[in-house]
Image 1 (tube, helix red, strand yellow):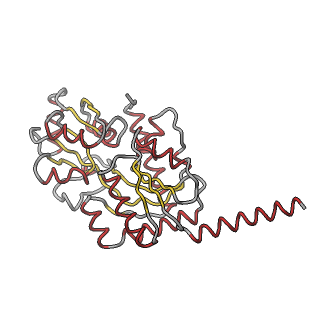
Image 2 (cartoon, rainbow, N blue to C red; image 1 turned 120 degrees about the vertical axis):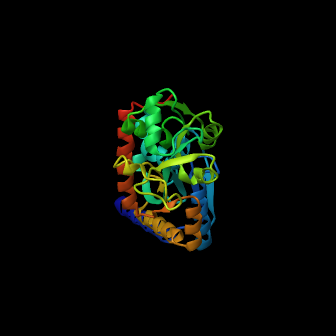
Length: 319
C-alpha cells in the first residue's frame, strides 16, 4: 500500500512539473542583473523584458543586484527555485571569468542552465586625444619608446576591460600601468580627463565619445570590423585570434527544466528579430546572437577557456 501511494505521489509530481512547464509563464518573471542600472548589461534585458511582458501578458521585472563583480546577483539566482521565474542576465564575469579569479565562489557557474546569449558587443581600444598615436602601430611604437607613459584604466580588476588590456600587452610586448576603478563610468571619466591615456571599453558605452572626438578609437576587438566604425581596424587584423567581446547572456537556476529553458530561448529569439528591437540593439552597438541553450553552453565553455588562459599567463590577481 505504501509503495502504491509513493508511486502515485511520484506520478503526480511528474505530471505537475510537466503541466507547470506547459503553462509557463503563469506569473511575473524576475531577471536579476548583477551590475548597476544604466549600462548595456542593464539595458539589453530591459529591452527584451519589455517585449516578453507584452507577448506573454505577464510582468517581467529587471532587478539590479550589483556587487562583488557580479557574484552577489549570480548567487541569488543560483539559490532560487528552478521554476523559470527567476533568471540571471549577465556579461561574462560571473559566468566564465570569476571562477578563474576567485579561490572560492558560493555558486558553480557551470551548473546554471543556459538559455541564450542575447547579443555581443566588442571591446574597443580607446586613447585620450593627447596621445600622439592615430593607429595601433603608432601607439605600440610610442609605448615601447616611453615604457612608463602608458597608463590604463579599467572597470575593476578582473573585468573584461582589464583582461583585454593584459591580452594586448602580451600580444604587443608593451608595458602599462593599471589603474582600476569601480565601474565603467569612473574609468571612462579618467580617460576623458587625461588621468589615464588608454582604456579598452565596451563599444556600446563609448561610441558617443568616439564620434564626438573626445577619445580616439584605434582598434575594435571583435573578429571583424564593425559597421558603426568602419574605418577602425579589428585587432585581429594585426594579431590573429585576438577577440574580446562583452556578451550578455541569460541563464536559469540549476535543475531548471530543459523545456522551460527552450521556451525562454525561443521567445527571446523572436523578440530580438523584431525590427524595433534590432534598432535599439544597433544603437548600443550590440550584435544580436540569440543562440540556443546548447549553443550557449558551448560558447561559454570556449570563452571561459579564453579568459582562463589570459588570467594565468598574466598572473592576474584580485586586489
